[in-house]
View 1 (tube, rainbow, N blue to C red):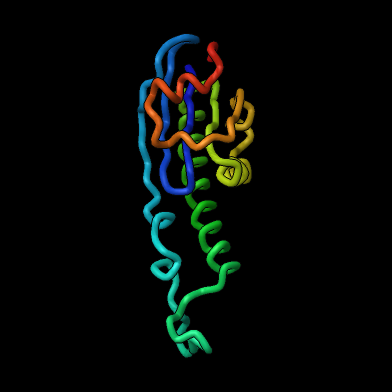
View 2 (cartoon, rainbow, N blue to C red):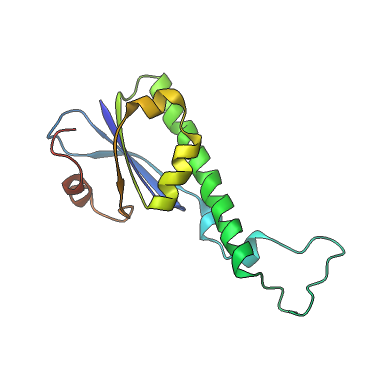
Length: 143
């Protein structure tokens, strides 16, 4: 049995296939709403902190990037926990990862040894909104 994880920083889809040329069947979808929020909605000034010369309370580019990276990392951890559970329950033996490079990096930080051993391939692609058929066309013929 093979699972395919399609993910980005805010959405993930897990597919199952039982044979090499069989179609993909979506078995789980997940959303990480925090990744879709604006940075201003994710943080607030700490008590006693003044907004300084920028009264709008906006945050610098570096801080915004760090906050978004933290949320991407949190979602990757959640996905890796789900994958670990699936592997422990022998729900898949092979795994393919499909995600943009930053999300692939976040996933690699949290994959446990058993799940890493099951990874057969990974693709730096943004396919979370793609059709099952389109996703299947980006994967090896024989899964």
